[in-house]
Image (cartoon, rainbow, N blue to C red):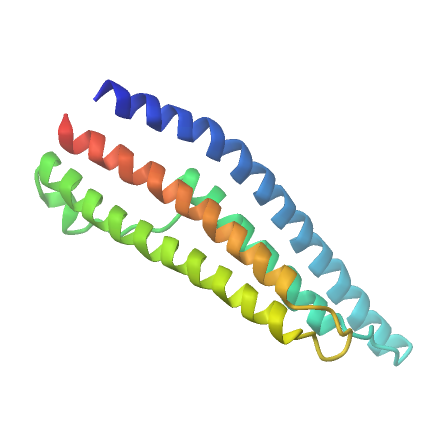
Length: 168
């Protein structure tokens, strides 16, 4: 059990700073989205000159914002949980249920990471680019894969914490 605590502590020391930095990058992308949208609307209305490719850029920035914010939200336990039924069970049963759902979440996130990486290789082979700006799509899918991978590490951390609760 002491080894599990050390593993949790070690994982937390890695995941916390990485998720904080990725969240900061996501916040910068969100601010850039806001300014780009405002500039596009203003130029469209006042000068009848929309910003070429703004829709594509905003879509890519949205992918960055969401995927890079997932891990930080999870590490801060900011995701919504509904424990109406779970709160009525014993503490040990709650820990078991949390372990099971934590493992399922971890498996799903790991599968998502893996399949996103597979998708990146297909995008590289196909040479898919955006319609207006002709930007390659694969780097942005790679960013999403990285964000989900960090999220998977946070879910692994939570699963180990739940497992520690079950064992104590």
